[in-house]
Image 1 (cartoon, rainbow, N blue to C red):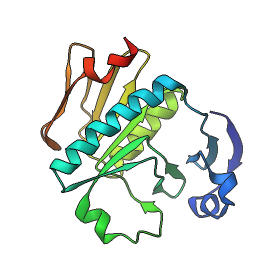
Image 2: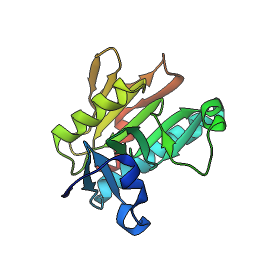
Image 3: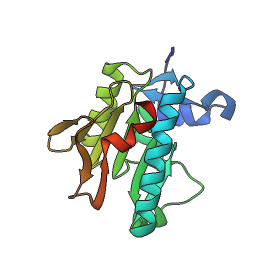
Image 4: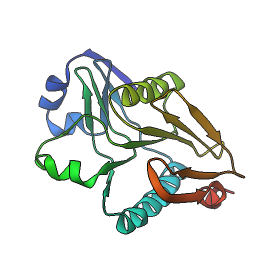
Length: 182
């Protein structure tokens, strides 16, 4: 990701012509370009997208939203790879406006972001209301699940990704998530 160096507020960021705002986030008031992800990133995102889509079909109280920008604060606009929201909450929002606030669950798949940026986004998402943030590391074949209470758990290939308190019944062995990469 390349920083553009400009300091701005979310309103200014949203006023940019679409071609200037595409594949960019606003982090601490700074425009940050999102690089095109490598194939391993997209493979893992595709698998998680499928798994969460199947889950939301079986649990219609949840709604899957891939690649949407969330206006998280005055100086932060993040675009997680995947996010999950409560369907009732989505239904209350104006579908023609950008998302304000945070999702229930944000999923960040790491391929080029710095640890500092990922940590910052996790912290802000959780402080602003997300229940959990999954940070997926395809190259290391691991997932770190972060929660609002400050607890985090690191999962490896032998573990199973589950969220009984947030997503009852959701369960995926990490071996399945990373199978195409092994």
